[in-house]
Image 1: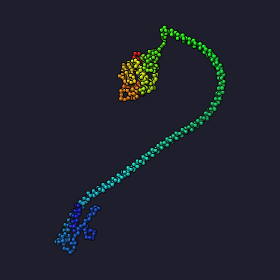
Image 2 (image 1 turned 60 degrees about the vertical axis):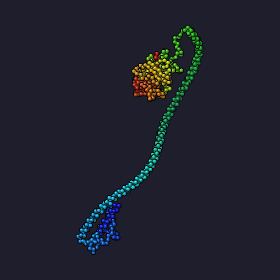
Image 3 (image 1 turned 30 degrees about the vertical axis):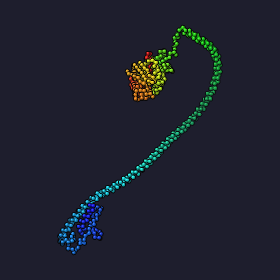
Length: 500
């Protein structure tokens, strides 16, 4: 509205300017005023005036007068009036410029708003186009991915086919090489066969000569056989004579045996005892101490009869160490036997009494239940040093008690302290965990033993050879002899009655 009032006010001012304004291009008599601003042109229609305003040569008044009844003025007054009007025109021109500037300023905000709307519309359009392009791109990407996957699959198939073809080619090449090698061998054999034929001919000639000599020897042998057959016949005759004589000797031997029996019966009636008679059947051996006390003082394998055990048991008796009479219950020497066994195997024993073995927990329990026993453990390291640990009292519980170990009175050279738990520990194997550790000592340290809380000893551990026996926690160890990680060379556990 302010712009409209400005235009109206401008029209009124221009009407006061008078006839100095130029007419428009039309012939209707109306006048126009045009303002050029940049690329825009503003045209203003001026109001109509009376015909008396037109210039007339006969009019006595000034043509620039605003009123018809203005008095007659002189020429100087007209020039002053004209100057005044020019001055007014300049003022109005400046005012018009300001008005134009004001209009331009008002139009700027509208133009900016229009530009912003245009930019927003353009941006929205661009976003829609971008969204559609993104969707199309994603679809194309998915299609390309599918195509790439197909290409990769096809490529992998082709690679597999190429590998198969290469393998088949390699096999064919190998077969060709083998066949070529066989052909060369055949050629070599052919050359050798010629030599063989020549040698065979030579051998045939030799064989003929040998056959001739063999025929001669055969004839000689036949003559020798006839002579030997005659000798054999003579020997048979002599043998028959000797047989008849032997029957006479047998009769005499039987008569002597009858005489000896009669003498024995007569001696038994009179209370005569035979000095060399031994009654082993009446008094069987309970352990190696009985064997030793019966006069057998050589180390070796003997048969003993354990109380409450139906079958006899073969054991190794050590008759040399510390007075002899020791029954060996465990022996390690060369690693030929695996000691990582089950509960049942440790119960019944395994190995050979003459080599590496474990006597068996059930037999150890039965033997130590007969009377009081002491335990001696012989040890040897890889440097040849020997040591022993001896316990005055030794026995184990039954299977229900997990063959619990009972010891008392330690002595010996294998450490000031005992490497076996004196207060009693239960036996554990890989399939029977009876130790006092959260871990399974039998699996971690291997073998079956009275581990307690994995403990300072394990004579049934892994066997390590020389050079490999250091730093082995699961080896054959006796802590207070060689430390916790030294695996020993040989061990022997043996028992003997306390009153031996």
